[in-house]
Length: 622
Image 1: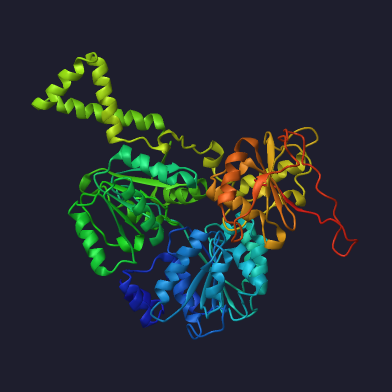
Image 2 (image 1 turned 120 degrees about the vertical axis):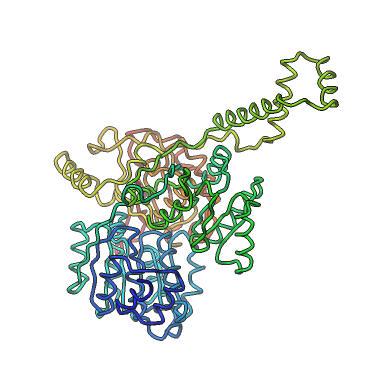
């Protein structure tokens, strides 16, 4: 159908030309259903799985809502898109920027985990489209750096995911801040009652769209061995290094999400001795052509690339595809792995991800109809065993040929100093050290994911049953014992056990508090601490206890076994754009024992009451 298919939906000629240049061939079902409705100005409530083309379905028609591209007031977009995670926000912003570039549309993504000061500069200039995570959108609204009075249309992307993450209050606040006369589109993979209530309150007579995911038919995918390694973020490079050594790919493409990550990973692998090259949109066409020619001629074995740069790349000898960054939808995953396993040969697809990305992997399995094996990260013992096996094979190959005369002379000389077995062991040890010089990471054990992490978040039905059991078995956690994270972290109540604890609470074991030299006046939130511990330290939420935030400092309670490591993680992290002091709580020198209960905070005088010490904000982790 080509670009004509999009033109038939009502999109203007200029936009169809952009789609033709980007290689879009025909609209997907959700695009066919949503684009005409949105062009008519109607609100839309769409149920469609990840990877069905939702981003183009809402962004293409709503770009027509942008008034005077690049000339509006500072920080006042015409189109607002709210997404659950920073990764999805960046992906959506990049897509909209591609679609609207010819028209001069300016797009920015604002999300947690990035220094908010860096986001202030682009918001001081005219901006047409803002893609934001809920928590960071609220931050900018409170600062007055994001103004919603000119918004013509708003999109809630992956709305069910945002509610699962505990962003209900933030979404309500954002929607209430928007003009009453606006167009609203809500896209969700599922439509539970919470989504229905949100839509009923904020959408006006919406067009309802439901697109069921289509499973891949038998034989539609090449013969590919698919493996995933679930590891904490800080172990991704080490896991990749070991996997590449064990797999020894003939040639491979490693996919990253951004060009900065491509350049960084290429530098790391070159330092490790791999023949690699980077391929991304930041290179000139001449540079890209030169890289591809070298790769196709097998002068380099590995190509580090973004999806955009590798589009249309066809290499017959490709043996491996590695998803260093898992794509946020199944469609690019299928395109990536389809580059290997050609002509009846077996291909290998390897993915590296952390537990928060498991939902993306489950989406892939559902769409492709093929399971992806979760493998255990290679251990130091496996690595050494592999190296010795390779060395034995190399020596066995040399035994089939006659050594040179000077080699025989050296053997006879050394034989006079030691027996044959001792000499052989020394020679093999020297060879092993020569091939693989000792590295400090060789003895590092990469922690495998827990069974609970692999099980994923509870379904809505499981949450309802758990709530019913709580009501039947006794009072559940109070509102003060709950906390909600921001920008992609999990949320929920922290379980405890011990004498006097509510029924059903789990035992966290001995805990110790860390003092953090930043507090509420600096805008510190529990999500900042949890994000640093999870993203930078790879910490499981089960090891995070109460978080208490005071005006100028905070305390975070951790399982005693991880305190020292996490103390260094927080010292190296940036919280609210600054480095902070982190140390063990001096008032809690001994670990808190299971069942002991939280220590009492300072007394509190409510707002408007007598002056006195201020009560900390207390949260519980999941």
